[in-house]
Image (cartoon, rainbow, N blue to C red):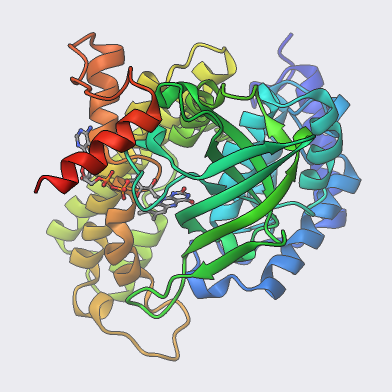
Length: 422
Ligand SMILES: Cc1cc2nc3c(=O)[nH]c(=O)nc-3n(C[C@H](O)[C@H](O)[C@H](O)COP(=O)(O)OP(=O)(O)OC[C@H]3O[C@@H](n4cnc5c(N)ncnc54)[C@H](O)[C@@H]3O)c2cc1C
């Protein structure tokens, strides 16, 4: 039965009122909309403050609202999570930068689908309490788009595993507590069949995490060196040598299925792109008809992205999402975030290109522009999303593969022989 003007059922409305009262008592109201911070904003101290905030949510019963109660969540339907997100928009909530997405929207949803109940009972409450932030260790110097080609080696030693190898591009690994790591456990199987996922504490003996200094002087990514890192057998996610199945789940979440939609579809187009409107005002160009067209374009991108994200999240909840379908969301972000970032530069003009160093937000427009391309590479390039859509959704012929059926050790031997002939 519908008992409210918000479209809530009586049960949801009662939940909304409870949340409203709890938020007012426990969190600080926002004085400005949530914004994307620069990379160097995130320090261990900033994360510590956000961990405390996450703990407040956990203690109040508002963390993991739709995650299973057996693992520390609240076990409620996703609509209740959406109600919470709508109400919490006006408050300061935990912000772990990229680790928010990798932990809460990608890695833990993947673990919930594949890890053992014992592991989940131990691990998920730590995440919900803000004690375990998780980064992703999958890319390697010789394996990015070709993810099944990873060469980090996991060797069984009694009840434990020993990891050796190198990972790269791991976003915020220097600030994370754990990394979800893909390694090769069978070198005689074809490359997709000899892989296994592990959960690795970032403080492990033998694991060196080196932040990579980028052109802007900050470090968003790291490279890692694994030298005899010991992992207990209980910290394997999914079956041994069944890592490719787990990877398919992770790619679905990576491409957007794990993000709660916050009631996006129901809430309509929302306000005109607030950051762009602010920029147009600050540049004195809000009446300029060309700028107004650009504001409309940014707004259209925002709304289409919101609705697409909402549909993908809904398909994920219904269990109807395959990596090919999820690729539409990733391809949208990879294509349109750079366009939106360019619109910011066009609206802001010289003000976006040069700014007063005393203005803490001055660099945001040009940083978004310079970082715009990242969305077309991180988590799988635009080309790989197009391949997934072509092969898995449209049914076009698969890309020819010379190595998918051979033992991986043979693939490496042939690659070495081939190198020797040139
Ligand atoms: C901002 C950012 C954050 C990242 N964060 C992480 C992280 O946290 N953890 C992690 O493990 N990795 C991370 N990565 C790595 C990312 O997943 C890889 O960069 C990505 O998968 C591409 O791999 P690559 O860089 O090796 O490029 P390559 O795979 O070498 O690709 C080079 C070019 O060839 C094209 N190409 C390759 N294969 C094909 C094909 N079959 N068909 C058509 N075109 C193809 C690609 O599209 C690309 O244009 C991150 C990357 C970025 C940019």
